[in-house]
Amino acid sequence: MITLHEILKIRRDELNLSLRDAAKLIGISHSYLSTLEKGIDPRNGAPVKPTPETLKRISIAYDAHYDFFMRLAGYYEIEGLDDDFLIENNEKDVEKILERIKYILMEADDLTLSGEPISKEALESIVDALSYGVSQAKKINKKFKSRKDTNELRL
Image (tube, rainbow, N blue to C red; front, side):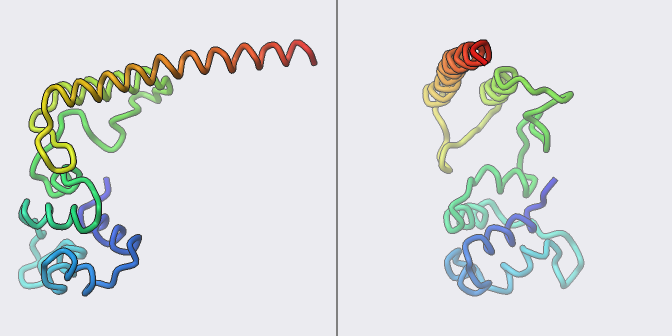
């Protein structure tokens, strides 16, 4: 699993920010950002765990999901969410994968959307959109498959 300090460095590099520029954007010292990116406090060798407020500032500055940083920092977990939470036992069926995602979303507590608590109605809207997307994809896939079958018969 990728660590918080690794993702901080990767994201800063993606944004083409120097350590000092990124720290200024976040509102922390460049030495503290350097420590966060290393993951170890040089004074005592202990792992570094930024506060939720610091993670919120980073998520805003880096245009990334706050929940993702909170999870990486170990503040909370969504049960069943791990490195391969989407595909279990070599699952390849998109519909089954989406069903698992919908289950995780509906069973998780304290989810947020863009850093704000998400309402039950908004979460249900997301789940409904996933269901609609699956039904549309089935229709498209069926049309594409029938066209492909027709073309193969012509050859």
